[in-house]
Image 1 (cartoon, rainbow, N blue to C red):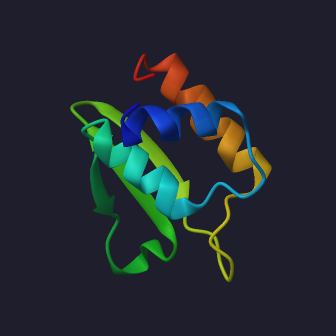
Image 2: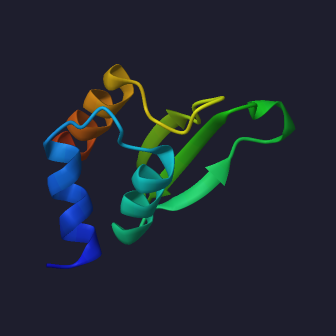
Length: 83
């Protein structure tokens, strides 16, 4: 099983300790490119693939995604047909 498949399976299991770094790695393995929205973007990060966009907030001070962000990410990836 590839790293991408492991991350997809882990995301689908909705673990409480899924990190922003894992999410970023998964999005990059799906071909998405990171795009900071300029100096005023703060912790907002956008990932793009063609005309598909996913906006995420980098959590702080911890690296774990809150459950609502994890569920939203999973829903968006499924809705957009990426997983």
